[in-house]
Length: 469
Image (tube, rainbow, N blue to C red):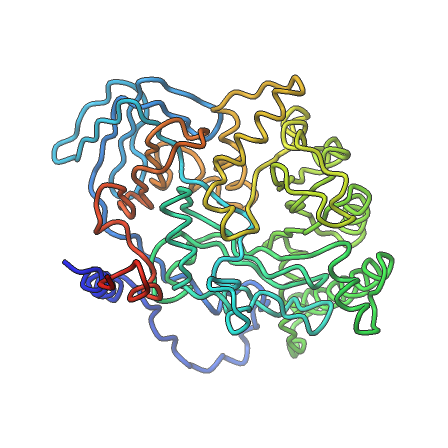
């Protein structure tokens, strides 16, 4: 069967599984019915439906459960899209596929909390560059999902090479307030809504430091300094507090609903705790400033991303229940990233701070397991010994917590989504690759089956792909 025939068959499958949302009625609102606060509704709901899977038992494997647990010679059973059991000597259910994984490892799927796949897709040409709405220092009204291109070849590469089953796609960092993020399952779909993780909270991208002041200072406008960054942020949050106050008054007293603002809807959602703040921030002092600002206006920072100096304020992050999202050793490329150290992630772990790895890169997302191994090795050289099964928390469970979906995925626990990777060796080795990857119990990648080594439709017909010789 040709590659194009496979792609056409997959398209027919998508057409049957897309799950388009039913049309909404346009009935008039009764005069005595109050308008619901607009930030509590989602006008672009998920239409995600899991691909059909087969009950599967993987046996004789080393298991990292994602929450720091390890089982040698273990088994994992999943069916109906969920993990059913994990342990040793599990019974084989009738009709289940049995995979002997001797010499291999099983882990939860990798979760990348900081990706730009789809809004900065490959090929990296200007026509596809849709991650930064760099026309105002604050653009809370924009949503990353409206830039995501589902045919980005990066999605299939992240699945096949990196075992990535879930990712958060963010706006870029040109702006102080860059807009909403979207959390997606790494599946093939025709629309972003067809990938959208059901029930995942929205994120809100903010940025500190050099990027906003450089982008807007170069245009001769505020902010052009770090103090300008904070001033613009504070003025915008004050508008949001007043916007929410008007809606609260309307909810209590009735009358005409306040005029709606799409930008303020997002910020009001943050103030309500429904939208999670993911803040690009390198320097320790700026993280402290943002924490103070969040307390002034009554919102919570879920995570600081990049966090090159997070090790300096690990205790402060822990005390404020803020996660640190960091690289293994990507630093020194600009002044605010200059004081990075490779022991950053290990120090955060030692202090009990919620910490994790991330990519921010279409290539790095394909080897996050190796990035964790580098950070783990740096810790060991500094005398901080972190077991492999604990280090895997940086790739699955902690990212799931930062995205507000740890009750659904991120670890191999009965009842959770069967987002599972079978690795062909130790997953913290540079020589190891995914052997098979399941998303919600559906086998979407198999290194031994050409029909399950799919490529983006965009790549078909390119040299080395499809029917081209």
